[in-house]
Amino acid sequence: MLLCSTKLFSWFPTKGGISLGEFFIEDRCFAGRPIINAYRVAQDLEMSGCILDESADAFVSDLRRALVQNQQTEALAKLDQTTILYIAPTKLGEDERFRAINWVTLESPGFHAFRDDVRDATMKAFLMHNKIAVPSVQGKIVNTEMFIRHVLTNLQEWL
Image (cartoon, rainbow, N blue to C red; front, top):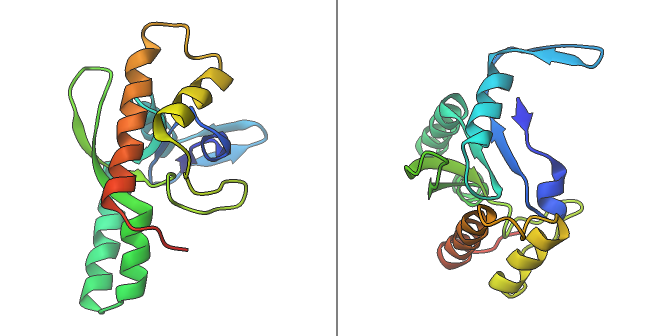
């Protein structure tokens, strides 16, 4: 189950979580453990981004091992560029290691890879969502900027 708005990719800020499992949808109602898990992991995040919960992380880890064993280097490179390990800040003040979606350098419909000045673009994005005036948001802005810098410093762009 993916609870991550496409708004993230068309100019953040938003938070999202990804979880695996069975869920149910009927009309406008949906329920299931992965929905709850994705919501919880997203709500605890103190930055704009989308992270995987334990079940989704385990799935990606298993997939990664299979790609390594089968020597599928191109698919492995794409996976490693799409989902990255990151020590993400949480509302509890404890930084946790998560697998995050790389929305910074990833080209996708409606979103172009991040190429602007990091600080200015981050501030502009939060301003566009009227998120700058509240002092508690300042930490989220800095944390989001640090995530962007981490991705730009440590990953190579691919298309």
